[in-house]
Amino acid sequence: SAVISQKPSRDICQRGTSLTIQCQVDSQVTMMFWYRQQPGQSLTLIATANQGSEATYESGFVIDKFPISRPNLTFSTLTVSNMSPEDSSIYLCSVDSGENTGELFFGEGSRLTVL
Amino acid sequence: AQKITQTQPGMFVQEKEAVTLDCTYDTSDPSYGLFWYKQPSSGEMIFLIYQGSYDQQNATEGRYSLNFQKARKSANLVISASQLGDSAMYFCAMREGPNTGNQFYFGTGTSLTVIP
Image (cartoon, helix red, strand yellow):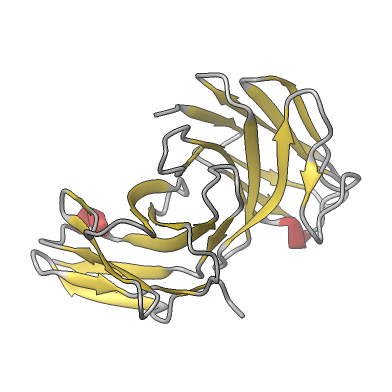
């Protein structure tokens, strides 16, 4: 199974600032997924990041707010821009297992609190 | 309509007892996968068990088993011999279609508390 490392694990941010979350995978993967989990809620897919192309964003998420980079097959970043308290969430990076079962493996998550 | 429905916001179970967490799903695709994840308070999502739509037998992984009732579109998670470390949020999820790159749909989760 893939080992996924996310940084930072948690942070407290001021309104109006931006924060970049890093996701490192110990093996090469085609697609990386970024999820948001607002307090007490389920997971919502923000975007799918493919190496060498623009990320594909889900409805309700835009590149200006959540720019994503995918410079190689083992690394991706998600930036949360111009943060507001509503952006306080756990942000999770995930990858497909590559198995026939297709489960997702997740990083430890980045817990952001915006004041 | 919700793709995944978990109707139990919170559940309690006595240590060493078994507990069933409910999950129903909605899809018209004949090929799909069902998954359960555990999320401790630390936040990471831990994959527990998988059931494919064409699987004839219920999936089992150690103390976890999935009670798959296809006609009723339910995929309940059974945890046997509960341990204090089982206290966490549990999410049911579905992936439609045969391709592993397809989107996952997650339920709203069930908070399980194991009582000593």
